[in-house]
Image (cartoon, one colour):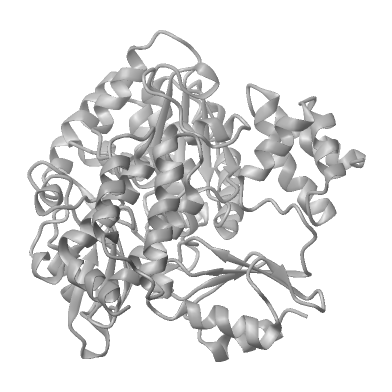
Length: 154
Length: 414
């Protein structure tokens, strides 16, 4: 279950909205931060804390792409391949991640270091191709630059 | 043009409240609080400001509907779910000029009689979240937010709500569902959010850029504001330019600037000396324009006449080397992924369109596929709950209108 400080954090969030259910997405983010991903148990904790039906919590959670329902690697690579990034070569970068790091889209590298998610537009189209690693933006990517950048994430 | 929305963003500390105040920030809030809300509403109407999220609805009119509704409380939601592919214009406001947005929201809240605002920020902008939260804290400390703003007894509270990666939540009723802690599926309209919105109360949903115009309208007045831009579409506009250009980026220009100037004068022309082939002028869900149609004013009136839409003002530039079948296929992959599944034409249509485009791109296209694409697109357009389906259909229809030959060639090569 959540510890007291997390429960207090969730109470603080509830107070900002007219209805406790609005705290659901923020609480799912908190659960993901605490446990790394949203396991069945993690979603049960959220349901219990907010006094919501578990099915509602699971249904809502699975609607949103940024909630992870399986364990992920130590670092999450979110590579954009939407049109602005695609026409400047993002697909080559996705291929390179497969070949060099064994990273298929929506999978985790065998060493557990990286997970890769192919994204729909991350709002970095002016500096395409672009990716997020965890919460860091990296722009103007090339195969060589990705290798250098990923060296910084062990 | 003097920068209004992106004023001061070259200052590396532009997001700090002291720098913002030094540059004249929050003065317009003081001015606004010394005016009557109804007088500010008049100025907003006179300004001709239209919503910058894509629909282009007159802001003053939208507000007056919510103001006329006797139900309380009223909520002000800022749509910062900037998800339209090709769009990155709100990001500089959120990351570099957050106090302009906050100032605009407090003024708007005062006019609307709202004491609670929320910024619905897309999950993909973690950096903006940190900056906004810091900016909110500073604004509370200096009494620009809180229970007694500037000692005038005005109350307004502001909270950042983080989305979680769903394009559809940029649609205002889906955004409302999402902030209520539900799946982001659009609601039927009517009732409109101005009457029955968040938590069933009158709710205004405005885009970041729209709200960021408010301090300037208060400063110079509606009439002076309306002098910028084109005849029926006033004000400054942020254009996000991406793709095959030398100098991509966000440009603040008068509404109605020509698409040709945006590409060649501001974004530096086409990369590598190649020829221009096509432009998506308003974000991925607006129909493509061929190279010979770019002599067009970028506003809510002129682009529909040219066969497209202003959308979010996101210009995606494609040179001669870009394959239109591939772009269309990628676009439909996006729409299929982002379809919320609530209504059948969109849910089934986007998948079906994507599958056909996929086989054409892979060289497995069949005789009759082009007619089938047109037929499906025609059966999606205008028959969906929200504009996502229209956008998907419009992309296919627009591409077939201007680049049918490329699709035929791919199919014939089988």
